[in-house]
Image (cartoon, rainbow, N blue to C red; front, side, top):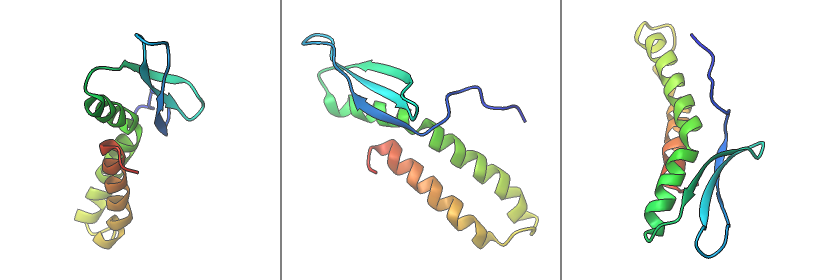
Length: 102
C-alpha cells in the first residue's frame, strides 16, 4: 500500500476575506496550510455545503480505509463483527462533518 500524498487532516472551514468583491471560504489544515479557497457565490448554503464536504475528505478517507481493512477480518471470523461498531461510529461522524454538522 502506498503512503498518502495529501496534507493530513483534520481540515476545517474558515471564513476568508479579500474585500467586497473577493470574499471567499478557505479550507485549512490543522497546521494552518490552505488546502483550497472557494469564492463566495449567491447561494451561501451551497458554498458551505461544498466547503464542508472538502474539509471532511481526510476523515472520509480514513473511515473508508478502516472499513476496508476490518471488513475482511470480520468476514473471515478473525474479529467479532461487534468490533466494527467504533469504526461505524467514526464513519457516521465523518459523514456528519461532510454535511456541515459537528
